[in-house]
Image (cartoon, rainbow, N blue to C red):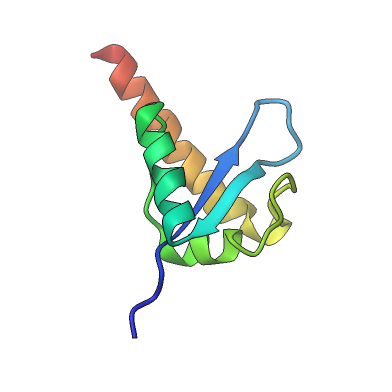
Length: 88
C-alpha cells in the first residue's frame, strides 16, 4: 500500500522565537502546497521523516522544540542556497 504524499510549509523570521507551520496537507493539498512554492520560487526540501512530524503540528503554531535541530539544518541549507543564487 503506497502512502499519500505529504507536505508542510514553514515560515521563519529572524527575530521569531521559532519557525511557524504555515501549511500542512496530504494528497491534493500537498500537491497544492508544492505547486504554490514552485510558483513563488520557494526552495523545497524533501525530507519524509521531518514532513511526517510537521504534519502533526497545527497551522499557525511554532514548531515543537524537538524539531529545532532538524529544521535548523533545513533553514541553513536554504540560506546557503539563497546565497549561491544571489551570487550568480
